[in-house]
Length: 122
Image 1 (cartoon, rainbow, N blue to C red):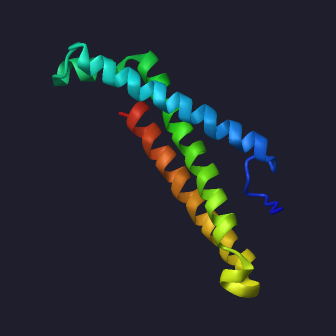
Image 2 (image 1 turned 45 degrees about the horizontal axis):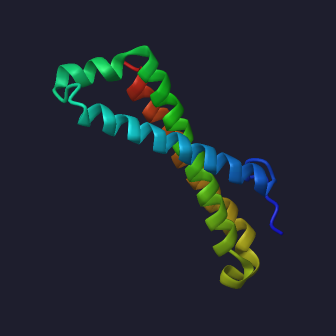
Image 3 (image 1 turned 90 degrees about the vertical axis):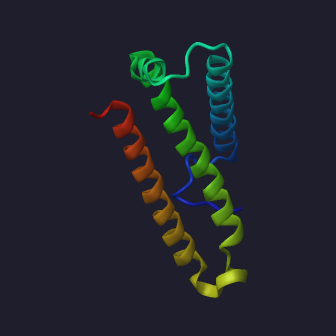
């Protein structure tokens, strides 16, 4: 069993629940947006801008950004712990894995901050 400080909880069940909850949230979000577009509520700039700048939609978009980051992190953590092993890299596997996870964590944090800036910024 691989235990790492870079996992969400050191508990596979918790990580599984995070991934499933985030998948349900993302699915509901995209079904809702698809329904908005299909129902003809407006696909012009003014209607889309009004929808996306409303406070409830900003809150929903914030939750979606965080759900994407959590979902991606669990998946990336799983892939790095499964494939960056001693068999692949010899004795340097732990360092390579931690470096890869640190880089991925920084990228995800940057994407989350960028997304939040787009949602709540000027």
